[in-house]
Image (cartoon, rainbow, N blue to C red; front, side, top):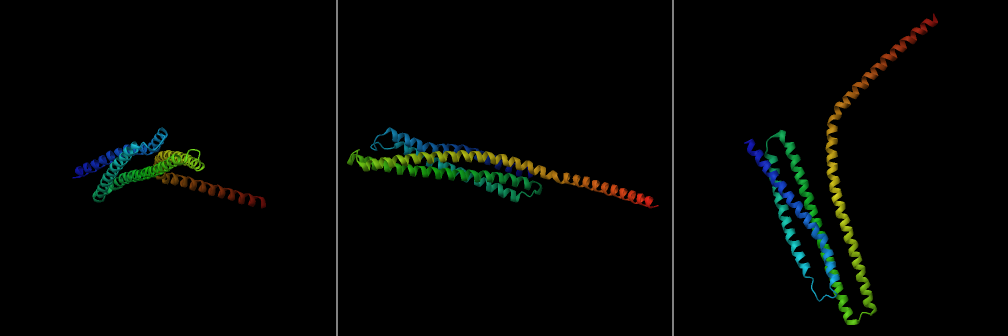
Length: 248
């Protein structure tokens, strides 16, 4: 019975690790799709001088985004189900000596699930914001081109629209750079988090050894205090004897 329970737990851990590996690969591809979306749209806008040619590739990227988002959500749902099964197992394991280790493993898988879920929602929100901004810029460009064809290139108001459009594009590039920096910072923080966990584990190990060290130090201090009292008593007795001898 114990062997069967152990095999069931190991099977759940194996499924969890497999889903976590798949999610990691999917999230990397999802993040690359998000960062490449805006630059691809910029390249197409530079190649076409007017809006008579539709941006067909954008719709394919949108379909890819929707497909990947659904796949990641399904993987997150499966991983959540595995974690729930692991939680049920730890509650009904009935082996007190193993409960602490099982709970530690379960908590680690829950932390990974939480990190992946947060990263997915953040990347998805960034992608939707970039797509909305790109659609807005495309609409502004179309309005500017329509105005240019109706009023002439030398029109003062057209020049103002063009300057405003260029300003928007510069702001767009600045936002993209900020997003890239934020994503790089996130990766660095994830790496630092692993290092801090390792340091915390070592500190806990040292903390478990401190009681024995403190006990040894206390015994040394007590012996030094006792030796000091004995030495002080001897000096006091000698002083009294010297005074008695002197007054005789």
